[in-house]
Image 1 (cartoon, chains in turn blue, cyan):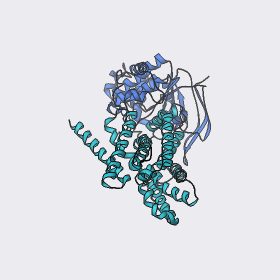
Image 2: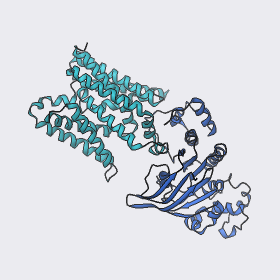
Image 3: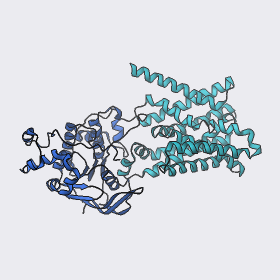
Image 4: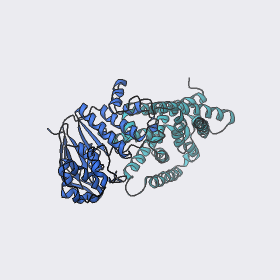
Length: 269
Length: 264
């Protein structure tokens, strides 16, 4: 059976309808990316999946004994709370030292156990959050804009790490992101959310869907151009006039186009 | 063994210190200082009601403190900022408490004892209540420690791990109400928040993990109790405020040490 099945989910926050009539499933081992503009209910949707928010109507059923590894959008640790990396990884379940070491290794930040969480760089912090999620030995890894605050190279490296982790753990991955060109290519399926599911399918399908184009407009020219390169479409139609882009298409995921649109989702909590 | 009033005071103070220190850490980590204040101030109303109905003071204080904490929790996020809400509730409950006490003729003299504590008048029976309450708090916290810490870090993280942040919040609220009730006799309702916050804040620079901070805070609180009682005994100063003063001096030393270390 599916890991998580969502049927006709609607959520109101106060009087404001945030999500309506959302149907969604994710299978074992699948990588699914949710994209959508600010305030489209992406974070709300994830919070429903992890059980932090009760749906107004509709149903969320999880596979029995489902283990979720959750990487939050951000984690503000009060400066009055002393916390080493090793201690953080032992929350809420106590972990063996060897397991902690292995998880940090898997996440690409070995030997950080004794460091204070407050002293980590942004990239290290996100990887420590990933390591904590991995310690749950998850069936599904849920990431809510996990690369917020990282630069382009940092987030590309982070997603690369996720792909490696997915290969060795075989877990499903569900992530929310606005960095479309990096994320979409690694996904089996993309769901475009804007209060409801606008469209979904393979990255190529969604990138060319009119609903998606209507939502993201010209802002994602870079991402769209990349996909068009991959599939040998003409990019004249996109109005892309950057003469350098023809050189970037051989490494579409490692190199960021200069005009990638980055949305500020700081208020989308 | 507990014939000596000073010894009884010391044992009572240590009991409160032991329970207040770890709860105080959570109050600091979760930025609930004003919340602790409101809960403590509400307790005076509980004292008045308990005396009026001939109930044990401890029971009244726990009940009203808990009621206050639950009211604040349920009212938060309904149009007023937490800051305003707590300001209104903390001071009005104190005012209602003081007015309620004034209706009780024979208690008027004792009012100071409830506001600032009366640790030197602790009876052997009080010791039982204080240590019973304190141990209950410590057991509760040790039992829920991992869950409380996770919830404090991030409620969503706790949810994803199958915990219920609301339940953990309730555990903390209950523990706080218990601490307030046992601390009334020692420092009084006005200074309970200080006993929660100051030792925890003083312990922070010396701690690398939450557990060590809680233990250190307990040590600081006990040292403050001993020092405060000593000063009170030799200089004839009020005991409760002397304890808080001692804690504040320890905090000052701790901050000084922190800034010297950071400068180096």
